[in-house]
Amino acid sequence: MNKIYLEGSKVFKALGDPKRAMIVDMLSCGELCACKILEKFEMAQSTLSHHMKILCECGLVVGRNEGKWTHYSLSTDGIAKTKKFFDYITSDKENCICKEVNPGRCCNAGD
Image (cartoon, rainbow, N blue to C red):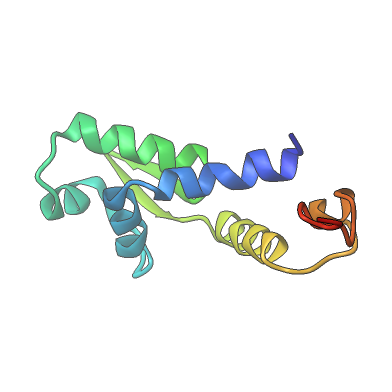
């Protein structure tokens, strides 16, 4: 499978969890301490850490440590890459995978 699809789909897999999508939405307003994110959700700190790890690993979120807490923000680069990937998979292009298939032939052509 093409690396473009493998890397790009990680973001959508991460956003497939509604709580992670909500966290990204919260971060759209700016950097937040993990303690503020925890206030919004009824979850253990370890559960939040798991969600944040997934969001950081896919490149959407970055964290910085300050004392015992981590402050999270959206990754400008990660957001740009995600937008570019979504544009790529939803646009007609010369090297589209559909053009690798028998062009002009339908499964019931000739019936």
